[in-house]
Image (cartoon, rainbow, N blue to C red):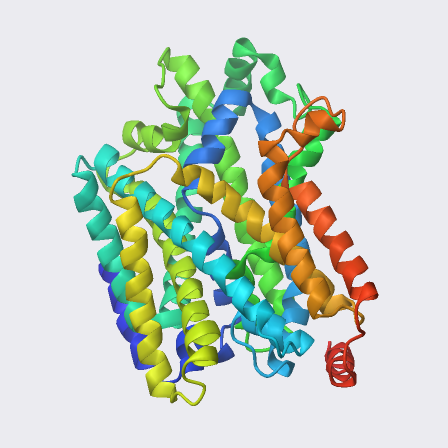
Length: 480
């Protein structure tokens, strides 16, 4: 935490303009962009949720990791370089809502308003969920009071985000991401050595249930498609794709892709094997675990010296803080650039905008903290809705805006609305069974498909883009 605060102070000395505060002056190196995107993406789910699922269900739960890896790879391959170029050409857009407005020449401001509100609502609850996770971590692992834990977590995260802005968030993400990866490599390897090697681990798991070693056991085609469908969410996550916009040049996307995917694959493999090897270890020792999602923590407590255990617990804290800070800054930038500057103070100075951005960080933190304070269980549902909602509503709009010249404002708006609506009603009204499916289809998939169809249909049924918008698209195509 002290290190995070020092990085925040260093970033503060490097931040002078509104663009610096919100987007790091588009000066992120490929390594920083890649690790920052990975750390802000992978929250406590990577260290707790995924190992717990593998512990419970075996390798078949790894399909979600495969889907996420594919989605992240395609995001870096197709979206990153093009979005970096397009956001600069499109009036130097520094937020996603701003990009939507400038990409389509939307003078009505409806795209900016609607997408800003979606970000503000979803991310406030998303941030609150991270605070809850941090409070629970302090409470259950460090034996601290829940509210004290939240205040410590929020206090440190707020200070370095408030002071250092985008650079502080990105640089701290790099440190936090490396801590997470090292811990996820360390835990399964030491556990495997303690077990007696791979052969012993496989034998223990096979004795419990041989099918747990099979990736396809108990998986239907719909189940596999649903797990792989998680990867579609990447195209619309503002806190991830904003890293693409902050790259120094679009050419850096290739190197960033290699670094980012290496980090992600190593970390995901570490999480998967933590769950599976942890299962073998518990079986060998004749032990039981109350909550499989704590297997990463339990192995750290059992097998390591307290100093190393502290490092492992720091990885959990890093996962929570990296996600909270990234989402906090994206929400702040939307409030500042897309609402305050656009509708209240168009001629605001750089100094004023930076000050407003910092005030916005504080206000959003206060709102999220008020929600997290009572530790509501329903927030977990809001988190899943946020990932799916952003993926289905923003994802298709981002993708088609980069590669389809004929797309217009009304097509984009139709895509955002229809994707969000389908996601909300799909599970509520059990549409999977209504259309004859044997099991539930992950709502992101139909939401994404409907959004694409609506973008295409509405764009063709309404007026074609202006010549200026078409020329802008062609300029980006030439530069890409």
